[in-house]
Length: 393
Image 1 (cartoon, rainbow, N blue to C red):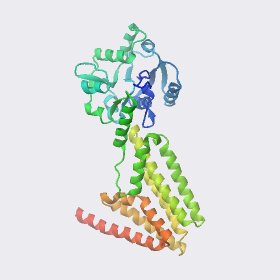
Image 2 (cartoon, rainbow, N blue to C red; image 1 turned 60 degrees about the horizontal axis):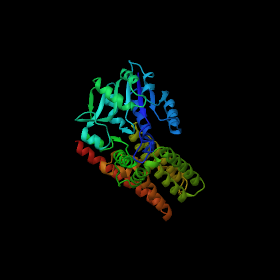
Image 3 (cartoon, rainbow, N blue to C red; image 1 turned 60 degrees about the vertical axis):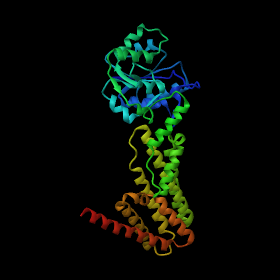
Image 4 (cartoon, rainbow, N blue to C red; image 1 turned 180 degrees about the vertical axis):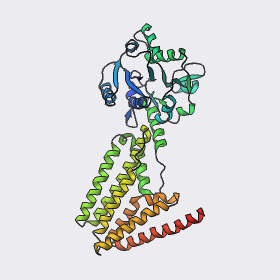
């Protein structure tokens, strides 16, 4: 069994507790807990100066995962909580480690993570020998904790365990110095360090955007800029707002408010794109699989709402209106399937289509513009499909 050992003792230069600093809208200690789960830990022991609201909140989060939680004040208390047949997963105070990169290195292995000494000490890590500095994580046999019984009660528990793990011959897992600068590994010595690393992490996690799809690109840009405050609950809130917008648009159509319905539908599409972008960022930051079917499902809802808005306001019979709507969206979807890579964002972005239809409705030329759009999509499909067949032949 593996036990995670975390700490909330160290403070930044300004006096803030490192473990409770925010990175990407979450406390650093929560990031450590995520990695501890990936590494198979079933218990969490946290070193703390004493009771606090932050510690109580963290305890609740640990227990939500069904893990056993213990808070200790020093090395002597740890001795009675672990046994020789267990493994200790020890995190440095205020260390944030990329889950995707490091979990594979320690899932079933023991080791002491180290970085080049000069690069490591420059950012605040402890030197362990002439060539190496500790990288903020090690996995070792828990029997090393037995030696803590002979140590002073006010000793640095993490530092002592690190020395004992090295003396016990735990192998070194070397990490390139580059990982200290690309957001993969960081030590929160100050709020400024956190801010710089947060920018790096968000930039690295952001989707590649193309202004061929201006609505999606705008949403991705907004998601990146607002991620630090919106990453936690923003994806769900914006998705709820988008769905509410779809319902509102359908309601407006039923009351013959066609222009307002298209305007609300356009805003709903942008809110949905914003939600997808935030979900993507959150998935990358937290190391879990992004919801691949969310953009597809939301586009289906937009398409259904758009068909309703087309069917009701046009002057012809409902069969003709239904035919126009289905033909338009069918052509648009087909164009996306056969599109070249460069133009794919254009066909994926529903806000473009909705913006054109809104402008047409304002000018009173909806039927004519829909017919033009249908012909454009079908012509694109025919020409591109033919070109692809020639290339394949």
